[in-house]
Image (cartoon, rainbow, N blue to C red; front, side):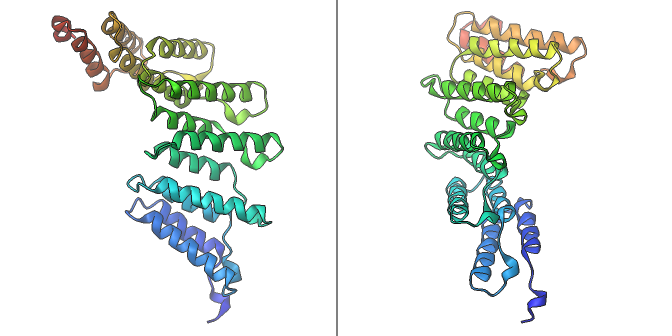
Length: 298
């Protein structure tokens, strides 16, 4: 055919991008199919204008990140990342992985139920940190990257295993250190980050530690850091931590946090308005305590 009408990389990338945003079943498979077609056309010399680039691969990764019903999304995402790293190592800098690439793969892993997904996510983060320290500014981790790894560890957290909490706290410290040292201004933790940490501590059966984080957030917010303002999710995670605790005063502690939310709401703070989750968690806490009268009162 007439090579002048062959679609180029820009056109293919737009089609892949549309599939990644479509939310249709099988969208990621469709997106990867278009990528395979591009690779074939370019490698066989049929269409030299269809050379895939980093944007192409990132769009396919984004499609896999949105395919929450696909159990093997993490496997496919890691395969794409490995391919990009291999090709760029051989000199094809048009497909060099960047912050978006790695952050998207970490996001896929954070949603995965695959065994070892959290450790794989952390390994990728460490690789990014090391590459960035060596001068590769294209792979600088940002707050989304770090928060996604913490979120990945939250999937592993349980009262029988505080390993996830240790990993999550270490990642937060690295994140804070990177930001405070002026080494990486993009690593500033926000409320999403801290909510993920509190969630890990809550699921690990560490309500006192979780509440220390909350107190720190309240102090930081009072001192002008609006990025870390506690919200309903924050307080609900603390209440949930207490509701799962075996401490004799756990239910009273859960109710105390709920009343703190109600007080703040009365003062005009709509962002901490108690919801169904709040009240259900407090009722569950009293039910677990064995004090039925208090549960009915709650």
